[in-house]
Length: 160
Ligand SMILES: [Cu+2]
Image (cartoon, rainbow, N blue to C red; front, side, top):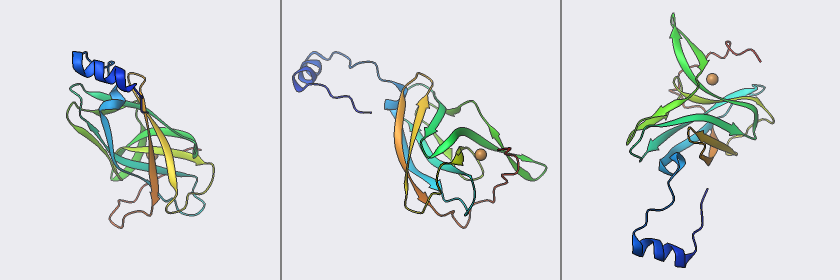
């Protein structure tokens, strides 16, 4: 979310070098190449992927995601259990100071469960990312067909 500062005030702040209002975590996070994987016809769940870059000097945590496109949106990771990839909900995704967290097929992802309507290729899905300090960032992720190289995902662990 953008905060508008009156020009005169902005000038005063710049002139006097008064630090701007303490920046929230969201201000330090850049979201690169977000996308939502197009679910097969009839599937009620899919996932969103992206890279979160943290330009701040402190470690950041993504603690929640919300989207109007799904009834439930969770943060997930994949674990390899005996050669089978299983998904698990995680309480947070860490984004190291000056580092990044990659959400990609077969790893961390934003799980979207109980889609309210089928998602078509090219649709834009609004997702709100919430951080540990209560700040948030809204992104728009286009719906894309799965990459051919993407690892198959086992959704059998979901009981919905
Ligand atoms: Cu998942």
